[in-house]
Length: 108
Image (tube, rainbow, N blue to C red):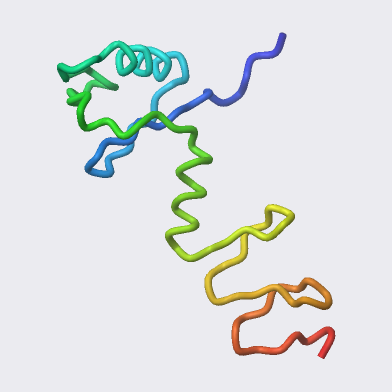
């Protein structure tokens, strides 16, 4: 079996917006701690940082945060999963991406 060239990372997001990248096995342990907490919040160490468990938003895959960031910038996905930038639209005839206010140069 081949070893992966990159680490399988997850991102812990804190209420203040701080994002901490950690390996999947450590992220699983963070999930376990969060699931075991009932009413009392406590501090836990994540990559050398003390974090109040009450401030944890969640543990996410990097792609989730990338998509969120794109949507905040006004980008959107077409039906094929391609990202289209803010201020652009897809020509209904040929499918080319065109800046808003311009006409398609291929179909007229």
